[in-house]
Image 1: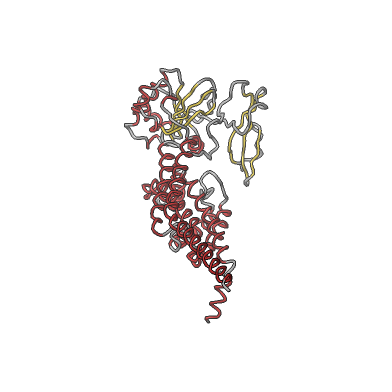
Image 2: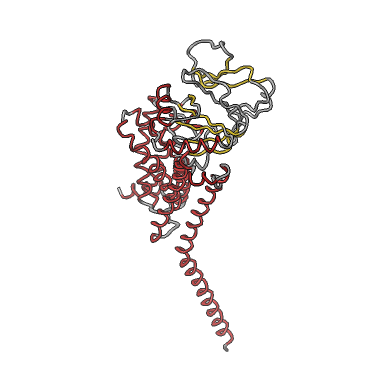
Length: 445
């Protein structure tokens, strides 16, 4: 029996290949967890929406109050476990925690793949979209790798010493929480959605749209049809694309994403976003969830814009009754239109959110609550109070995190380097003394 056990261990963790396998799995599995946690953590609003879909398919609407907590906690734990595994700290706890997560995710993703309850799992936020079956088959090797690491991860040395592991953990959690905090209260620091800054969402008026091509989907295949040319009613409407005679060849399709706006009777309205000058869009995914005192903030922002000739338009996914109640409650002076809920949430995060356009192009976007009224009162324009860009802020906090991690490593491992250097010096001196003694002995008659 002992011989069998010894042979099994040799096969799974041999003297030559075992450490290499563990190192490779640490790199790959740790990288997957880091990427998954980061892409979800950078966009807490998107995580709230996705976790809400999970709650809906299981009929757990009573737990909606936990959505925001989950949007911060799940990505933070995932990211931290990936860092722990990559750096080799908490060598026993980390793979066990990963295996526990996979023990939940593997059957969950299998259920979703079989039932097709949601469109995608949201494992990597909006950065990478996988089908439900792709997600399940991704989780199979992750689970097997976690089992292997539970058995053998502790055999490979760690990078940081035991005394500073808690500091590494604290820095890692703090880093992702800062990223998530900024993503929730301002905007995601990296925008993986279809409407990043620079996107043209309105015609630049170099030519009037003469016709539209309508995009429909069937059996996972999308196709464009002209008006009234749909073959049958089994196709699902996806989008409409304007076709113009003068500007259809000059506009880059990658940066031109027209949006569809409706009135309260759900009739298409053209010219809401005219692509001329500056225009501020106020996005309300849910009017009923906007806090009442926030109406003052909204109206102050509206007054700031109108005083500077900036057109203001409200967009929501709610119906006529909710819009009428909102207008009465908030005394809104700006027009309100209706948009598809998913498209509205894709343009910007927040409820409400503010999106600034210049000639139809997105210049910046942020949650309205991140626009501070005290700065707005003394600002000449929005540029005076926006601060640095999201990319620069992400670079800054990432650099600070990496610098702190490097500093901890240097302080923690300096004594090892010093000890190693001193040992080398002692051995070198001892060797020289022995060599000198040998030479002296050879000189004696």
